[in-house]
Image (cartoon, rainbow, N blue to C red; front, top):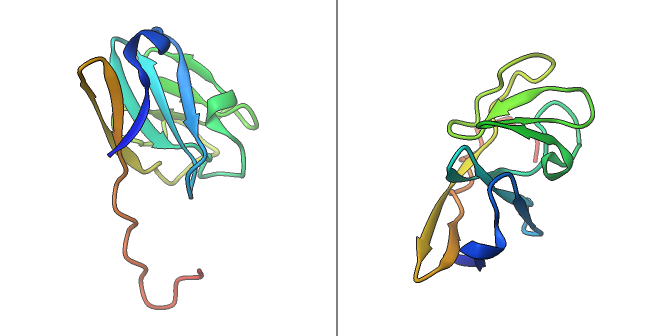
Length: 110
């Protein structure tokens, strides 16, 4: 688990980008805390610079949007989902538990 911030430092509509490999952003959206890989699956753009509406984050580059609860793309040009991560709050601190990297299929590029 990785400490993100104090819960009072992440207001509704706010986000915190963590410079991990790959970067992950934690969003306080629609009354919940959600974490996804920060890079749009369509093209290299930081979702922490995007627009948040409800539980949807819109990419600032080509307006693809993703559901923060599932990572699923909601419109083109994105076709692949974002990887989601577990977020919890303990004693006022927001914690991130990154998801495991998916296993590469034989023949996948590194």
